[in-house]
Amino acid sequence: MILQAIDFSRFLRGSESDRVETADALVESFKQHGFARLVNYGISVFSIEHLEMLNRKFFSMPEDAKMRSFKGAETTAGLRKHKDVPDGILVDEKEHFDAGSASDMDFPNKWPDKDMPELRQFLEPFHDTCQDLCLSLMEACELGLRLPPGTLTRRCQPPASELRLNYYPAVDMKKLQDGRTRRTWPHTDFGLLTLLWQDDVGGLKYQDRSKSNSRSFMERQYGTGHSDLGVEQDVFLPLTRNEPGEMAVNISDTFQRLTNDVFRAGVHTVDWPDSSSHSRKERTLPARYSSVFFFKAHRNTSVGVLPHFITEQTPAHYDNITALEFHRRMTQVLIDPTGQK
Ligand SMILES: O=C(O)CCC(=O)C(=O)O
Ligand SMILES: [Fe+2]
Image: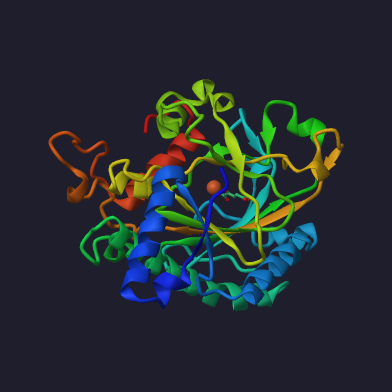
């Protein structure tokens, strides 16, 4: 099933009935697929192309220049090479660079100011633009879920979101067939929503819920550890970019908690594209770039179930903890696959 693109300008600038229709379409797409495709969401195609150009430039810098932005233990920001992750079971064949809000003093950014000052110049204001867009998406969700205005938006300030530039180096197909390595193994993201822009290489796939194992992915992944991952039982559908500037949005774990599973986090993976131009017979998959914005709740906000989603028939499925506690719990699970959610 192809996800219908939603024209978000009808929410941003439309009449009251346009706003309601768009909010309803967005909420329906999130409920059914955990994903939506958006066009005309208020960021120019030029900005998205510029973002992709900077992404390519950053990862094409010499190794020593890139390493000056390497993520230290004290921060979530900077460069990370997944091959270094001590997981030992499943390997993501990728590198990524993360940057939080300029106003976030708890986790300072590690910009490559000496080698590539334009990265910071563009990404600092772009971070604010993405944060504003996500607040509009939250308003649309409030409308579409019939929640009182402010229920969601007030949990998102001050910003704790992160921008990520992903780089998947060209890779030998044999490596992707060893059973341990993928560009990105199936996962859900931690925050509320994720915005995603990708190049034309393809390979991003989202779970087809009509054909996948009914047990929640989170339960399978984090409840019992990797050995019961069961990813091969899941069916994935390609999510390609149909026009420049188009954006994919997915529901992430925190939103699943707040809505007591009314929204379920969209499971996604990156592997070989299905298109005939990249058949599995080819020996090398070309490099791929994507940029994502992980929109997160404010760290001290409770991410327990909202009272609106608790009834006698459906008690709260999740405990009442802060966004920061939840984030720590999830990163702990990734480091220790036997850890409990
Ligand atoms: O590269 C992509 O298309 C997906 C990236 C992703 O899922 C992530 O960074 O969490
Ligand atoms: Fe993701």
